[in-house]
Each structure stands twice: as C-alpha cells, then as structure tokens.
Image (cartoon, rainbow, N blue to C red; front, side, top):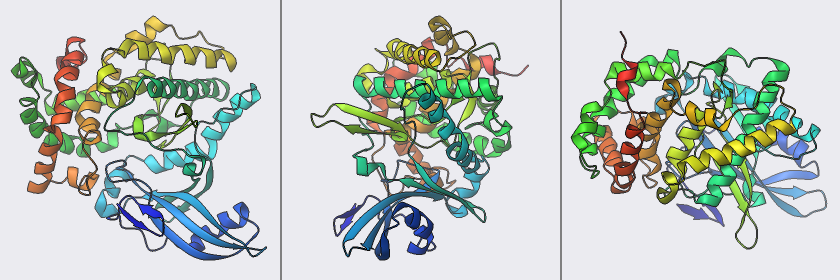
Length: 429
C-alpha cells in the first residue's frame, strides 16, 4: 500500500487507463463545483485493495481545484470502469453486468428511493451516481465519494458481528421491498434481469471454471478436519451436476414472493459509517451488476454464507432470516404492497428449494475461498481462472487456507445435513 502527499493507494499494482484524465471530469466538475476556475492537480489511485473486487476497475480520483475567490479545494470521486479484455474483461462482458448496472443507477435505484420518499421516509439505498457514460465498448460511472461522509468497507476476513449483520439484512429488506412494489406498479423488469451470476450464454466459462477449481477443492477438503471427509468428497458434484444446478437457479416460482435480488450481496458490497462512540450509523449498498428477479433466498443464502462471523454464522442462521423478514414486511406495508405479505415459514422453506440452494454451494465454492484470503496482488480473476501451473497453485492456496478450512469444517456439513448439497437432486434423467 503506497502513500504520497497523504493520498493512500491501496493497490499500487493496479494499471490505471491512460484516458482517465482531468478533462474527462470536466462535465461533472462544472456541475458539482461551478465556482472552480481550474484544476491544479489530478491524482487517480486504486479505490480498494486487491481481492475486494473481481469484475471492474475501481478508482478514487483526487482533484485539487482553484476557486473563484482564490482559495483551493480538494474534491474526490469514485470512478468505475470495465476490466481490459486480457484481464478477464471479455469473460465478464459475456454476463452483461455493466449494462445491467447502468440501468440500475439511471432508472431503478432512483425510483426505489423515490417510493420511500413518497411514503414519508428518507432511505438511501445506493451512492449518488453523478455521471454514467457509454464510451465505445466501455461503460463508466462517476459516484459520490462516500468516504467524505466517513463511510468505509468492513473487514471481510473477520466477518460481520451481529450489529452489522442486522443492519445489512434490514437494508437488503428495504431494497427488496422497494423493487417488489416497483414491479407491482410498473410491470416486469426487462429480460436481462432474468439472469444473474448464471447465464445460459456463459456455459463454457462456468464449466471451464468448475473443471479448474474442482480438483483443488476436493484435495483441500481432506485438510479441513471434517469428520467423515471422504463422505463429502465422494458426494462432490460432477461437471454435469454443477451445470444442471446452475441452470436450475434460473427457475422462478411465480407463486412465491419474488423480488429484484442484489445477486452479489456480501460484506464488500456495502459501506458503513459510525457515530463518535463507534456505534454503527448508516449502511449503503454498492455494486448492482448481478441483480436478478427471483426469490430473496438467493441473497440470504449468499450473504449469510459469505459474510457472517464464524461464531454466529451457524448459531444465528435462523435468526438472520427472521431479522430480514421482519423489516421486509414493515417496508412492504409502508409502501402499500397489494399482494399477500410473505410468511416467515415460507421464507425459511424457500432456502431449501433446488433453484435457490445452488447459491449456498456457489458461495462456498466460488467466493468464500477468495474472501477469506488476505489481500494479494496476484489474487484476481485472471489468475484464479488461469489454466496454468501458477493458477493451480493459487487455487490450492485459496482452498487449503487454514482460516477457510476452519470455517468449512463446520459449514460444509451444516449445509449437507440440511439437504442443500444433495447434488443427486439435479441429475438429468
């Protein structure tokens, strides 16, 4: 982590595109700081450490301004753009993540917040997006810098305590409730929201990734200290099982309570600020690239699996569902939802449905090994998916990490014994 003139660069290995210059920010500055005369200094740095984001380039932009009254001022923004094709951007592009996020920030998120405002509540779901742009094949965003309001990311390695889990689940419920009411009032979301992390267009990429990671994952299962580890290794899904399980996640039961899920909800995809005494104050969601219409169980399984601290993940599992459900019903009532309110028993049941339980396995197989690995310049999508000796060594390091194994020795059996890892359910006839 390098530091220059008080500006911290949390990822000095990040290559910053040359076209990101002060002239690019002229439109935003003219609107946001109309009394500035000229730019004195323009400093782009990484916004986050390596290992926190795998689908985009995130920058924090520092701009020193000279104002009309002769004073100087420093303005900061967060800038988001797409990965270069050779660094995994081509694979990410196949999912259509950036066009979806563009729609979220331009249309849907402002509409969701407007629903609460009309109901008499000021609820901010996402950061303010100051500019969106399609520049050739690239889609770019300029956001308010939440760090100015003392927002920060939480420590993904330690997991979230009860206070953070509670606040995050309540914010997720606010997002879900607004999207369900919006859909009720305006009709179905566009077809691109029928797919999330799983896309029928990405079959080759998904299967390739499973082949690469499956063997190192099974090797590591022997090291976690699970009783009867061989039983779980023998049960590990085949390539066909995994793809069938992935495709099943696209199924939606119209009789269930459905909503627009975040799709990638874990601890690095929200930010918090705190009161002077250290009490959690506000929480705001970020990164809306994988949103998908479907059952809220998708986000609940994913979030609890990836983000809860080890000592409460299993112990409070059912309590987390209640915390979310309680706020969900409050918000649906506030926003005058016209359909039957979701019942707690049905929400619990939805966690066990075949199409939803995919997200428990996907979380522990795809995301959790990386989330529990300390920041490393080599931990990126390009290297994790590399069909090389170095790539294989990295994947084995991720899944044999003792911290990860200490979680998995309890978590894997927990899901297995609840039937969520009964992969025979997905076998094609």
